[in-house]
Image (cartoon, rainbow, N blue to C red; front, side, top):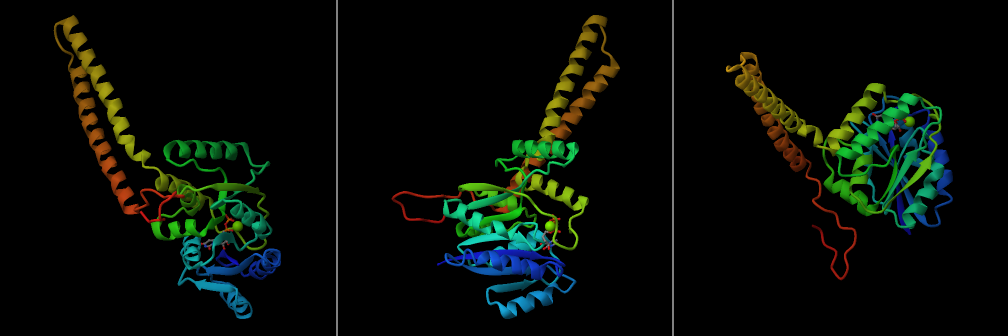
Length: 315
Ligand code: UDP
Ligand code: MG
């Protein structure tokens, strides 16, 4: 029998946990013929009664496993720990507040069984979402997909399923500190599928994400997947060189016409020339920085899906 690992991040969810457990175990009754399940709750330094509730659940159900953090490390860290501890053939990450409907678990498993290594869950666009939100979201994905080597799916969430081999890759090769799991699982490749879902309102409690935190996440997405901004120096240098040429031409034209150079044009030429050098240097530093980032991240050079007539072999 195959094994499913459910990974649940928990931060001050005392009001949702028991209900989450009840709903989820009810859903698992429909899959238990084919799947043995472990429920890994990662308690991310909750300050409320979540820890006690989880200990209670673990006491009466051996499928429940609990990882208690020493303090709050954040949702990404909690999911990462869950993936580290998971032993399943397929893993699903979901939130404890029931905004990621456990009812969809059978559908996610069906996608895996149909051959997907990565099952992404995309929130359906909120029809009532404001015009501004739509525009910014469109722009975000347009720019991101231009700047990075991966084509990211829109509106995917921290609700996803990954096969064991995808989880192994994330576990072993994506250990960087600036984390963006939903991006990593799209970067590793393999066949993926997208299921659209409607996120219900939080079952209880409050969202732990402020607008500031969300903006931080949006920025991380860029610095995690693109070194293009570091090339700004080169672009500025190119523009500056054009300006140098223009002002130098202007200086020559004046010199020929009037039989003498203009001091202002000469100063302008000198200034833009010096700026070109400065920007060029910044661009060069940016290139080296980009290289250092790639080396430090140490992501795999390539990932093999299948080989034919060859022994499976690690790179
Ligand atoms: N969470 C966590 N650590 C944190 C913040 C949140 O483990 O520092 C958990 C939280 O308990 C929930 C999930 O991550 O299960 C998503 O958080 P939340 O519902 O606050 O985010 P939102 O749904 O509003 O984006
Ligand atoms: Mg939520």
